[in-house]
Amino acid sequence: MRNKTRESKGKAVVVGGSIAGVCAVDTLLSAGWEVVVLEKTTAPPTGSPTGAGVGLDPLSQTIIKSWLPHQQSDNLLNIHTYPSQSIRHLLNQAIDVEKKISRMLTRDESFNFRAAYWSDLHGLLYNALPPDIFLDVFQSFCVSDDKKSVKVQTKVVQTGNIVEFAGDLLVAADGCLSSIRQAFLPDLRLRYSGYSAWRGVLDLSGDENSDIFAGLQKVYQDLGKCLYFDLGSGTHAVLYELLNKKINWIWYINQPEPQVKGNSVTMKVNNNMMKKMQEEAEKTWVPELIRVISKY
Ligand SMILES: Cc1cc2nc3c(=O)[nH]c(=O)nc-3n(C[C@H](O)[C@H](O)[C@H](O)COP(=O)(O)OP(=O)(O)OC[C@H]3O[C@@H](n4cnc5c(N)ncnc54)[C@H](O)[C@@H]3O)c2cc1C
Image 1: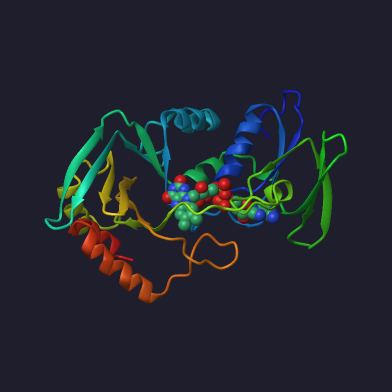
Image 2: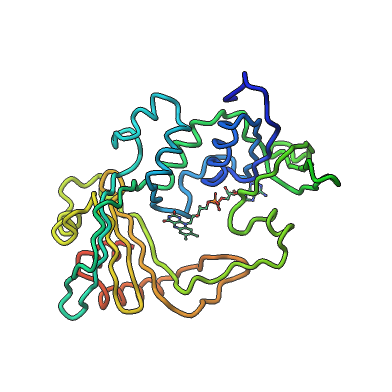
């Protein structure tokens, strides 16, 4: 474990080994804590359906760099080894639906962030951690009367046995439906943001002569260096390139809160919804963006 030689500051239990979990672990290890992670999935979520492109501002880049082994951190600014694209500018533009053209509204030259594919970034952080700190499924916890320690029950996946151990700090990185947060804040409900979103990553890396990519480059001339923010009426879209011709797009549509089942934040999509989405895209965006969206 990192920092083994330093005196331990205490023992932390991190529930959830996704992006927030691995970041918490890195922070705690760097600060001299002993850490165990309880993650219910047995493999790293490389194909995670949540999170496509993650934007890293300069401060996050510096912090991530401090967590990585030297060889990788030295290469942080080398886009061939660090899984992110350098996005220097941010461009807001309004889409003229009649003429199917875009007009620049504002351009930020010093945006200076990096865009990583969610699973690449998670993989990088996950692989930098000692493997022996990942344990089993979190079940329940209780806090001591003096509030100085916590007892956690976990289920061993292989045997199904329940084991209990103690820690000085409990980190709830178990997602937006966190059962730990639920215990402390039972009345807290997720709030609707006011829009629904379609999103995807179109991977054109295997297609050297992709006409979709060439078309995009004509209209989005700074693709690869710029994050595009397209505004339509009651709607907006974000488009940028992740490393290796992977096109990350998100299309936000302002609308009343849709009915989703239970606690879920996503809806089950059917062919009819996809068809409507594509028809709506035709009315809203420039043809080059429509081609990207239509691939879904
Ligand atoms: C459809 C969708 C699209 C998104 N797109 C983007 C995007 O493009 N860019 C972006 O930055 N963000 C995006 N987000 C948000 C992004 O997914 C989240 O911000 C990010 O994944 C949150 O990470 P997290 O670590 O907090 O939680 P999560 O990724 O939800 O991870 C929670 C972890 O806790 C584990 N866990 C839960 N309960 C237990 C338990 N009892 N025992 C053990 N382990 C447990 C889970 O297995 C999981 O690994 C999107 C979210 C959604 C829903």
